[in-house]
Amino acid sequence: MKLELVKQTKLPLLSRERVVFWLNNTGPTPSRAQLREAVAKQLSVKEEVVMIRHVYPQYGNPKIKIIAHVYKKASDAIIEGKAMVKKHEKKAEEPKEVAPAEVETPAEEKKEEAEKTEEPAKEKKEDKSE
Picture 1 (tube, rainbow, N blue to C red):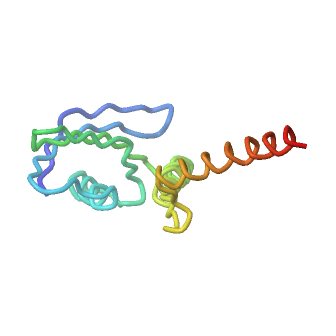
Picture 2 (picture 1 turned 180 degrees about the vertical axis):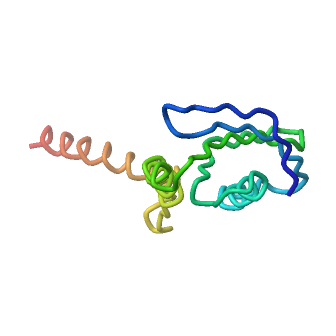
């Protein structure tokens, strides 16, 4: 994985640097863990201090824009790291599986509606005959 450093901005108040990379990639988009490892290797820092903020793959273009934060100490990265991990774990856990018995086809729904409308009509006819 070859990363091309585009921009590096120091943010001293937050004890971090914001770096922007371009990645030429012909296959599927790499995971955040793979990107984190590649950015850390490129900048010669530990993985614990690198947080991948954004990954922008472009449709029809093999280039991927990556924005990452690189902290001075791992303790500074913990605050952002917990929020990022929770955010991305939540998305991964969300897919809901629906049991096949719970899924109703439109034909079954129409039958149920028809049965509901027929029952009151039958009761009214019986009431009038009495």
